[in-house]
Length: 148
Image (tube, rainbow, N blue to C red; front, side):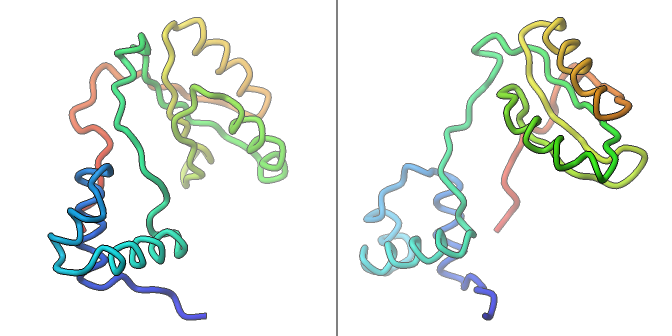
């Protein structure tokens, strides 16, 4: 099966949705000079192809008291990954977990209200291997979408 390649109109639709995920199909249709049903069909296809993965509100976690953002490097042996993945997916404070190259195999981004909670997580993670934790003082570039 051939991989679906978004065309110029698809890219414009994606850009509009990235700028405002609540934009109506009718308003998108006006911007791309297509009918609403044609835009709906394109959005459906983009979702089925996995290009559009979802629609999200961008939330400032500090508004809920999550003032500690940390990045935890974790060394996990390949044979332990089958136990590690289900474990890490269950932790709600984990924002992202990526398998990476280098001295450590996992890079885990977390947010917590208290350092004691972060300490507890690190103690739990050490069952899987050695850790190295970096606490962020500030973020100069927040998560953002790439230019389409």
